[in-house]
Length: 306
Figure (cartoon, rainbow, N blue to C red):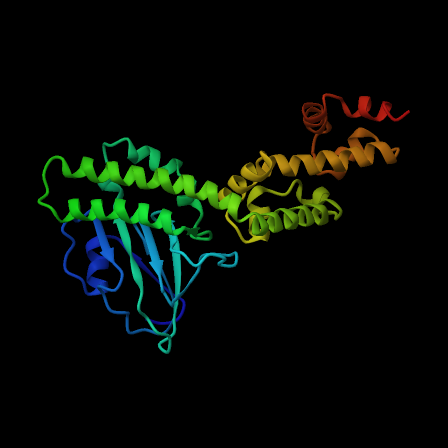
């Protein structure tokens, strides 16, 4: 492998071959224990794209991976999720010791076909975090998740029958439900780090609204703000909802209204001129948003200062 090269893995069986493992006992799902395969004889950076879902818990994994933008402030297991088509970048250093523990579950979308999970799996936001935000587990949480994986593994290694898929999917749905609960816990327990993000969000929006970017480019998008903060849009919105009860878009609109109030109360500019300054092509759109947020029209708000 060469540096920065990207490899696409289309099937779980193909990835087993890459790792030097026997064929999976089921072509559409696999439970792999870390440490059962040797570290690839490579050095440098490369990327992998899977055409299937991945859920993994890695410990003592002395390999740099492109996830976890915030400092790792827990020593427990790290759980993370990948959707088909997401890119995982790995950097190998031959000098580093490599004795990982944990597991990886691979699920091909076809395994979920004709089951409710085929649709509902897309509702779990952590699959959309593009492996930027790992989930840190406490010892108790890790034991609970490992128990579910053990049940799945036992079923996976049993003789496949007409109940196998249903049993595995039931355990998988329970694992995802617990993961959703644990992510909500993480938003709360990582208050310091998350409030730092909240402070940076305020700084980014203030700088944007005080520049000429509004008139030239319009309102900042959620994607733009998340990119400036080095987190995914989904993660940012979920975090803000837990901390403030509002989405990222609502924070952007609040900042806009704050700026609009300042211009209405301290300048003689017309509503149309202020709307233009704030990136609105049509002043009616600005007036409608302002009234929705304040229950006053821009002119009514200005009149309240006279």
